[in-house]
Amino acid sequence: MIREKVTLLSLLTLGIFLIGGGLLLRHFLIPEVKLPDGSPIIVEERSLLLGGEASRLYIYENGQVVYIEEKNLRQSVSKHPPTRVWKTGEINEDELESLIDIFEDSHYRELDNYYQTRGKPHDRGFIHGDMRYTVSIVYEDLAKEVTTFGYPSFDHYMTLPDMPYPLSIIYTRLRDITSKTTIVAQERIEIRE
Image 1 (cartoon, rainbow, N blue to C red):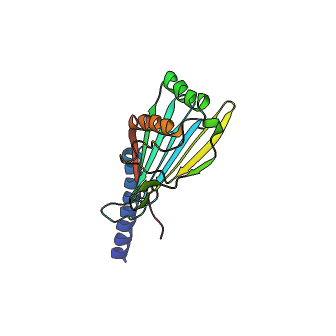
Image 2 (cartoon, one colour):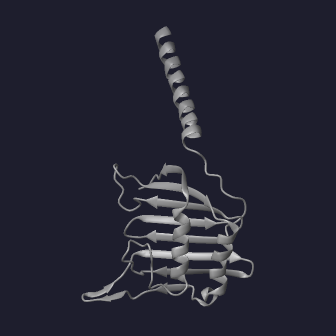
């Protein structure tokens, strides 16, 4: 009887220690991402369907930037599990106004909502990319979302020169902004089968 009580008490103590330790680890080792108040004014979403990668960029009116990258979504293995990385940053007022000007002063308003390319001619047919790209803005009297699919890139998606104007310029500017963000949290994504 005493032995069973000691065993039960030991298991209960161990359980409390593991749960408490897990909560402490989560609290101290995995920082929570504090999102800015309000809605973002510019949102960019990119996904490489075959590559198993996705990212979302949110830019807020106060210049705050939140960037989320997800990798190994398609063929995850124990060595390379699916992960999500949260990054944050900030752009100054001049940079934000310059970015908004690209949307307002270019032909962004006149763009169709969706573009899909036939591909780039090649000696064996056409070359296609696997990236789905969406960029939207909701700012003052401008509210528009444009999505593209299949535009090839020959520099690992650093540029997409064949996208309709001004999307290639917007894409490049937003890539510059994401390159200046810093990691604030990482997590493993649980994939349900």
